[in-house]
Amino acid sequence: MAMDLLKLVSNQVKLGEPLPFGIRDERGKLLLARGQMVGSELQLEALLSRGIFVDLDEVKALKEGRKYEADRQKLTLFDLWEQIVWRLDRLLRGIGTEPGFPARCDEFAGQLMALVTRDPDIAIYLSVRQDERRLSLYGLTHALHTALLCQLMALRIGWAPERTRTLVKAALTMNLSIIDVQGRFAALGRLGEAQRAQIRAHPEQAVEQLRAAGVDDEAWLEAVLQHHEHPGGGGYPANLMQIGELADALRLADVFMAKISPRVERAALSIQDAARQMFSEAKGSPAAAAIIKEYGIYPPGNFVQLASGELAVVIRRGATAHTPLAAAITDRKGMPVVNTQRRDTAQPGYAIKALAVDKAMMQRLLPERLYGLVE
Figure 1 (cartoon, rainbow, N blue to C red):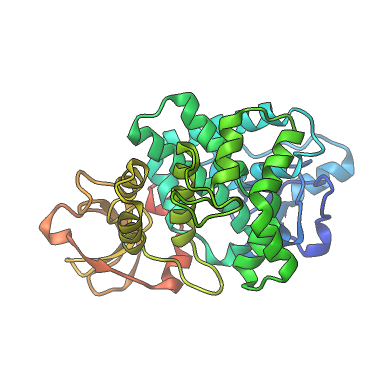
Figure 2: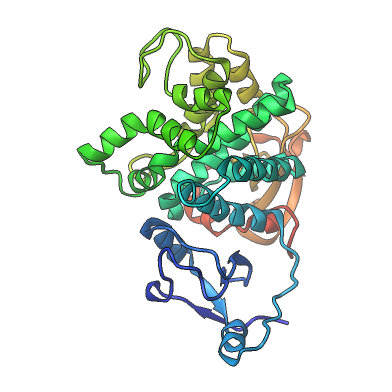
């Protein structure tokens, strides 16, 4: 049965207070459950920009004092990825107020890693196809995307599971003191001197917060502290000549993800250009090589022109870097189609001829439809 949805406005959501009802998207999928919180103006703006709704039956149930029977619509992986953004927000904002941070962060890292393992191509798609209307969430999404990249990179290299998990936790927490600053910079492109000082000091501040919260894993802490250092010097905060292996891997993943992420002041760098830059700068680093191989030439999320004349979105990596699986979103004449068709680009008739750019069309794409999760 379809929900009767009411669109919410800003004064109906109170910052820092438990939500009196669940917040949903325009299709009725749950984004934030009752009792969860929106922690900042930037995050509220990001929610409002996409449109947020409440199920009227839930509101009525609360007023009447009766039990609300939530919808049992099965959540897709895209729904779970949306929800994990807000769960990360609560985890990081609660570091100084909620007890047991090390255990909670470890549990979160395990859940994130399980989500990546369920479908690495969807994880990569989300890191490549970032919604430019939600730049104020950059601090959260960048942490998640860097963490998933660290996981895929470490798996390809062959790191032990516990070492990989430590790297993932470092990626999730490396910027915890500047989450809002990152979102503001991505969305507005302006920073004051105080904010620039915050950014410069954030590795040390993050380590201080982690130690105060009970984190005593020195490998985790060292990776966070050194993730802006450079082998041979030139980094910060200590201009070290040598850095730990975890820190260097985290640095590479952090930089790669930042380059392929859009900001208001600049477009995202293409995967191809980011990979070329990393290859030339990393000087044979196994971590850099693993990142390049994981994303390939045409990763999920790339918008491409096929030999057939169709425009398509890459949805799965293929047997080779040049031959992914794509979902056609137009016909041979370039007209949009309702039902996407899968195209194996290893077939000459559907070979990739070039990258394509059409921001208006890309913003209208429903990823669940590309992946065949909804009709």
